[in-house]
Image 1 (cartoon, one colour):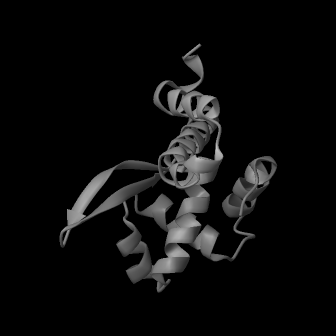
Image 2 (image 1 turned 180 degrees about the vertical axis):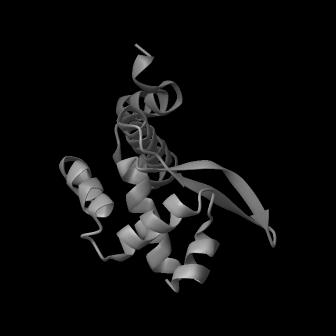
Length: 136
């Protein structure tokens, strides 16, 4: 997992070619083939679904990858992935991804434990999930 403070180091390693990992291979592939899907990556790089999904999630979390749109294939929807090089947009992508994951966590995970969470806390978190940090 790539931590926030190592994003710049990770990017330097990829750009210099010093990193021969699934992360860097996927990054390079998408850089050379914008609007690629996970299926494209699996087929062309010979990476398993689990590995491709996990590494793509890590790259999305850093903001260096972003989802442009979705593509339908055999009844499934796949994200079209591209590389972001603009530092400001990378940070925007990173924050947006973190917020998206938090909202998903509230929607999916938090409700599983609703019985253990005080009602006032639930209301606060549900409101935040809908309106973000600007709700007060």
